[in-house]
Length: 250
Image (cartoon, rainbow, N blue to C red):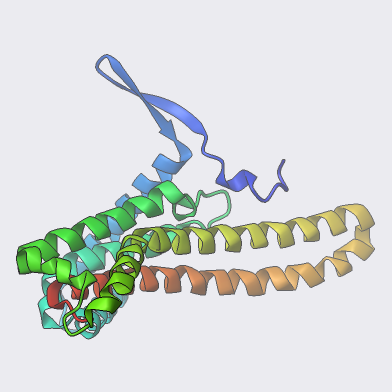
């Protein structure tokens, strides 16, 4: 069971929380979501507190992250998109922290669950609809039927655009979940190979186990990179979708 690569994704109840006449199950997934939230809040508060002219490490990291997200928002959705900067910044940092915390041995990767990533995607999708209708009214529906297209082509284009638009939350959520799931399974498999070789072959296995061990280190570094890249891709696509709602570029 310890070497089962899928065991790390099992949701387990670790306690209950009494709320009056109701009992709320506390799972490892919920604990790590709350831990990531608390850690992110504490990190942002500590980093923003000094407000020094010459920033320290935490303040400097916060300023770099702020500038990075600001550049991402303005490049993808223009200056008008800056009204959504707090949302995109929160989304990016929370997903990044959740992805990175899943690399801690014995932790739980919350973004490996489709229910979590789908919730993020549906929030983004709902915001796109709200922003689109508040900005353009019913003209927002022209997103599915751009002007200037010949009428015969509309019968083909409109269904394709509708399918493409409503597939966005699915692709957004599955992309993040699949990358976290696949990466952690691969890490577990290589770690299992190294342990099995050492256990089965003794000293010879110790030398042989270095091969998957080296791959494990390289994969761990790659997985750290993927964790940040996936947070960036999720936030960037959020900005692109919000840009469609704001400007209806087609």
